[in-house]
Every structure is written in structure tokens, then in C-alpha cells.
Image (cartoon, rainbow, N blue to C red; front, side):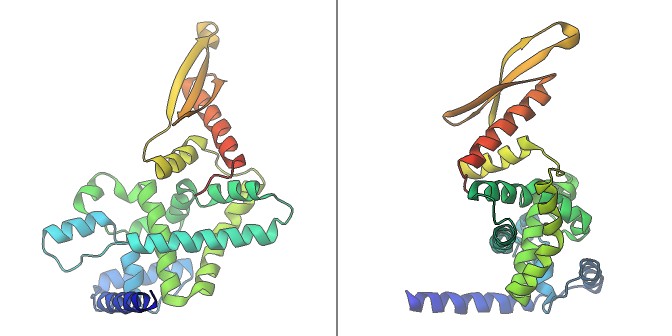
Length: 265
């Protein structure tokens, strides 16, 4: 087992050496340097930062065209997700000493959600640095929440590889501390449908099913009863002035119940 791990480390080191040989154009280098300056970080290996912005759509088109760049940011995203989770969990554990585990899990799930990470990414200019395939570019990929959030995690992973955990931790705390405070003080954007869908798709590879149970009241003051089905579990129904409001209410009910059950990421 130990020999296999050593072999893996050598292969990984060779991969990083190949990455370092990639040439970055002067225009691209200027863009990456501006991003670093704006965000307040500095990479020793600019190729790592560059890779963090490369979406798989560009990678796929490069392979088809036999171009040299055949790597994307998905492995960095995987690593960054773990670093982000660790930094956030440590922050919550050390500062919210009286909160139970379920509440810590709820706060963490909101703070590291696609909804919040994508907004942070937009705020710091990640969208301007993304490298996308033509099809993804034309379909508005530069503003898609999933792509932005994934790139944000990839940047964290890249900075961790480049400068170590402590520097990566400082970077994460720059933007995540304020989001934690918003959640604690109930000032965050509460889109429970998005939170529920992200978790359910990650776990079951499908979307929650919202079902209209009933409508009642006069036309000018009609109310809607909606329930949500998550595999064999049904939550609700809850009511709202329209279907959208009722769906948001039942999503909040389901999300709160799942957090109390200590859902895993």
C-alpha cells in the first residue's frame, strides 16, 4: 500500500511538472496578475491559477481539435471543496462553541452552497477569467452559478497546492467569515429551493418533485398548497399566495428537517 502511494505521488509530481511547462500568453498573464492583485493573493506557479479557470467544455473542445491543453479544473475543484469545508467547519467549531452539531451543519451547508460561492466568484471577478468552450460561452456559461462556484473551489484548491494550507485558509476566511455572520444574523439570501435542489441532486442525481395538493379561496385571494417529494419522504404541504411562494415555504420546511437529521454534504 505504501509503495502504491509513493508511486501515486511520483505520478502526480510528473503531472504538475507537465502543467508548469504550459505557456501562458502575455495578455492572459496580465489578466491573471490583475486578478491576484484585486483578490490579494500571489501564486508562485501562475499555471496553477490559470488551470483553476479552465472549464471542462474548453478541455473537451481542445481534445477534439488535438490542441495541447487537455486539462481542466475538476481535480482542483475536488481538492478546493475539501479545503473550503475544513476551513469553514473549523471557523464554526471554534467560534460557535454553544451551538449543537446540527446547527453548525446547517450554517456550513448554506455558507458553502453554490448560491453563495457563485456570488462571491462574481464579486471578485472570476467570470472575467474563465476559459470556456465555444458552446458553453454562447449559452451564457460565464454567469452560470455551477460553473462560477466550481471555479471558486478550484482556485482554493490551486492556492492550497501552491502555497499550503495556512495561506489557503487566510484566503478562504477573507470572504467566508462575512457570509457566516450573515447566516448567523439571518441576513443571508434564503433560497431554500436552491439549497434543497443542490443537496438532492448531489445525493440522488435527480431533482426534488414539487406537487400541487390543492388550491382554495376566491380568485383575488387564492392560496396554494404544495408538498415536496424527496425519494420516499414527503414534506408539507405548506401554503402560499402563489405556487412559487408555496414551493419556497415547503423547501424551507424540508431543508430545516434535513438539517436536524444532520444531512451529510
